[in-house]
Image (cartoon, rainbow, N blue to C red; front, side, top):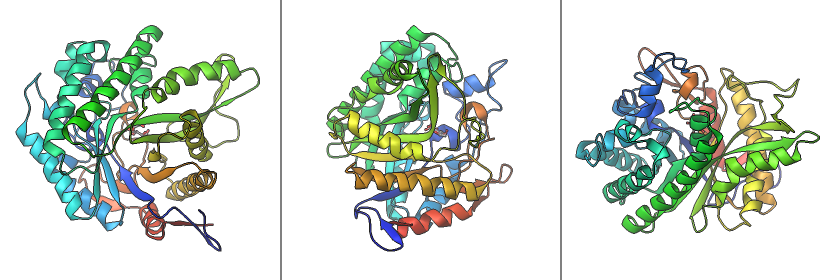
Length: 397
Ligand code: GCO
């Protein structure tokens, strides 16, 4: 697979993209559980999302940026609380908005990769118990059907749920996402319910928009044991990853999303290794995590499902560090491909500096900077760098 000389090539059909999510960039998403969580008294959030990058209005500018970089696709999410502002009440205008966005991307030669659920839940549903209730699974299926009917002819592929494992862990264990709980049993029940939500979403998309590739995106961590940590590692990984990998049989792809590694001892995470740079996210700079997790996903699923990197990136103010990170991560991807792992594409998180959930606007993941007052977008050197790699479909060695 890899070329000779100064360049190592990716497979011919390999695709390049960048990603965002509605609540992190659109602004004014006042009707979901996250907005409420951000504004709750004593909120753990650093700041509210507010106007974000104003991408609800500026989606065309964003599309121009992606097209200008020559990337193959743009992964973004549709906001459930805009499309279904009250139980069973669907907004034609919101669906039309996303239709225009998908069509506008296509006109620019960019494939729209649509995520149906990226962390946020409409307020009316969270008041009904949210993911603690089976009602959510049923309502999500209905929502997915409505979206697939409306966008079926303009979407290129569909991610059902973004990182359901993070939703369950951060919302019901760490308490850093809504509903801010800390209950092991409940988080496991929610995780199981989210696997069912994924399955009904796949059925809804396939039933309504047949032929569009559909899959799950999963957050994976390069868990590594320190002496005595093996058993604990297995248990952590089972609950946070394997229960979801067990639920993707028959899917068209698995979206792998990786940022770092975690060292696990007998009592859990032992903290960052001294000497390894720590990022604004609080975890290690560890680009090799991507290749390691791709191999793990491939081995665990017996190579039954093609993989795609639907997120990988780094929150940093140092754009050289970003380039270094992505370069090293891509070496890991190439090495994995050389060893037979079927990786179909790479998506950088994120196009824009945006709302990083409880951490607000502090971490800077974008290859494009966004002025917080004027919303002016300024591509960073890493954007041009990524564009070059994508154009060559190869990495300088
Ligand atoms: C996630 C989400 C993104 C994050 C990104 C950086 O993986 O948590 O998909 O919303 O912003 O991962 O932390």
